[in-house]
Length: 136
View 1 (cartoon, rainbow, N blue to C red):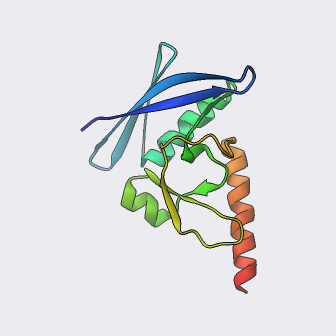
View 2: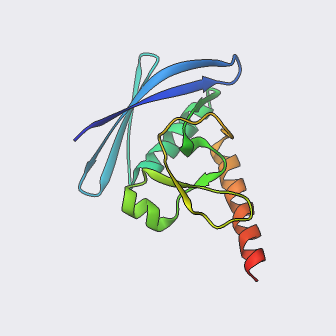
View 3: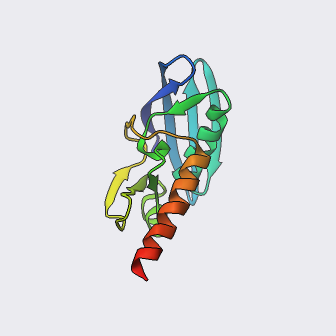
């Protein structure tokens, strides 16, 4: 079954919002996502929806565009088990100094802490080192 997600895209350079749709569906173990934005259609398939979102984020970042959703926040990251169980549609909201307990829908709207894929990876790496340091 195809699900349609309405997204908001931020153009940081001129501080404007564009609307887009992301159509998602799964066939066996492959996830497919079709992004429609400003009259252009992009298609991608990956191992889960998290990998599809990351692909689109990187594609749009080149144009200064950012998807306003939980999956684009620098302070979110899924565990491997959460990716497997949700098909990559769910992610953890990471609170500094705390173990992850808050699960959010990756494609739900959020305009807080939006960053690049690289910024998100850097935050996760620092958060993970900090958590491991506190446990020892």
